[in-house]
Image 1 (cartoon, helix red, strand yellow):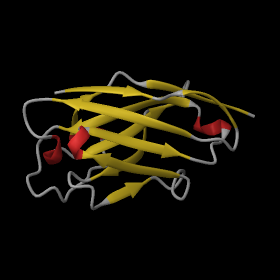
Image 2 (tube, helix red, strand yellow; image 1 turned 90 degrees about the horizontal axis):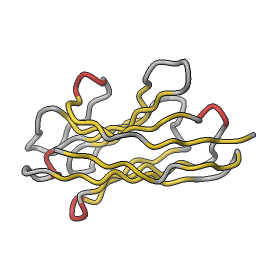
Image 3 (tube, rainbow, N blue to C red; image 1 turned 60 degrees about the vertical axis):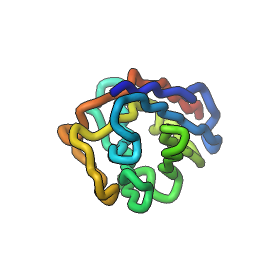
Length: 129
């Protein structure tokens, strides 16, 4: 499994960005729950959002709920993180991740990093005030 994240950049506070995470692997992307995490300078990695394999269930951290939207297009083997009303405190390197184990029901999502065995390389998001 390989994940390629992109879409980061520099944006003013209040602006928007959409991150993409392209999946490649032998097993269908549909069976992999996906999560987004971030790490700000000097801080620990933080959970942002998660989505089940079939995209029916999503979960957000309280800090981004109502501003960020996670989604996926399984036909394109791509997950997305739409980020609106960005704040300077959203500045971080954002990582997408796929679960260590497949979920054939497509119904589960995970919020703990240890549930994810495959990680993208990260994309930098910088929000200026």
